[in-house]
Image 1: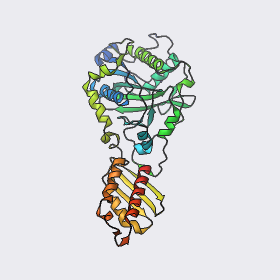
Image 2: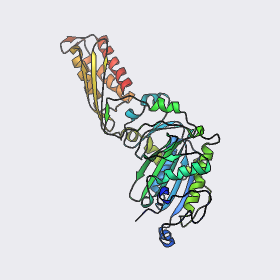
Image 3: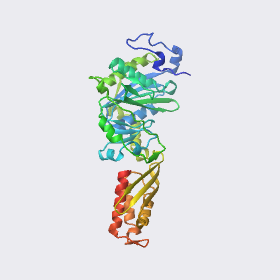
Image 4: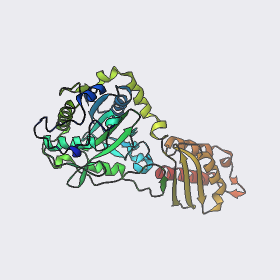
Length: 391
């Protein structure tokens, strides 16, 4: 069965005023009625990223699969990675943690994005039979061009651009009965912060996960002096509502449901999903297998490191010192790191402390090689600091 809502480019419509000729149907009224579709729009007043992504999850998993849902929302500062990505490859995780900026793993694929209040997110959820990858982006572009007079267009990657610069990325999720497309619209975001938190050079971190596809970006405010979060939401809401009213049997009006704390408090599932999204097991434990190599010259030896990780857990570590004097001590460190959480400062400290209090540090002689306690402590401290900086 063909999609109920074919791609806009196929219909080749220029929307200036709404007429029956411009919205000619591809299906009979009986066929549409039998689907019993309903269009709804939600606009979030919350800027808590965990709450918004949990509410999006609830809309997708727990509402009527015959509903077509537009969700408009924005977040306080956070980095958001795709479901199959490696956070240490995509983000400066340590800097995010230092600045108390949440790292979130979403349920859809695609690349990493940085959210702040200058960025507005849009999600369109619909029956899978009606889903096409370009459809939602085309509708957003129509809203931008007809309502806000911004010359936007859809790229081959289903992103939205203006004058060759990306203003919105896209990600998708499809299950048996439903699908969604969500995107980030750069309205007046701090582009320097995107570079600061998302630009990382880790060529020696080899992952089975999906890597982001970097593109030059810009803000909509560079093409309109009046565009804002509010005007963007209004334009998209109005355009989507008019578009779907013509196709959906039940019709709709231009009002949107406001999502605030009181509204969400009546949906227990949202709180449940919110906690799931915050767990280490989801944010880091879903990381695809990877290896990470790095090396450093210390005063006491040159050391090479090779980490192997599965589900965010260190499954093997090889530390190779050029000075064999420290070989046995290094072996003790390797054993202590296995099974720990990769990149987790507390787990790194626990591994180091286990070695400090072990038999290898109880005396001044390891494997017949004389090493003072202070020297062993220096080696352990240097290795710990180095691993924290590199992971």
